[in-house]
Image (cartoon, rainbow, N blue to C red; front, side):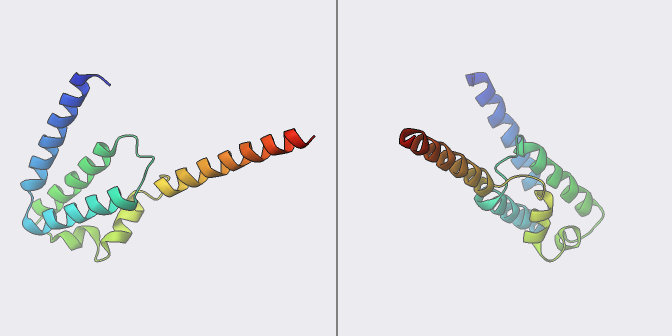
Length: 116
């Protein structure tokens, strides 16, 4: 990764967070909780998480412009809203489980090959 990529990434993130700060307070609170939820247990396979988070802000900006409360946009169960957003993505746990399974198979093959 080039230093220029890091700088561009930081600029993009700052602009993204400026959009969040421009949202009404209830939207900001829910956005930050969604962000925490997705970072802690969410998708590990998101190749460009900025696209997902920018899409959420687009949705929130539209809802706010229509005068809707944030829970009218997400529904009252925000965790379910998040799960629906990433339902087709593998989580970190899924990726790790696959990796562990592959390592166990390799190790067992080595043991089996040595006993032959």
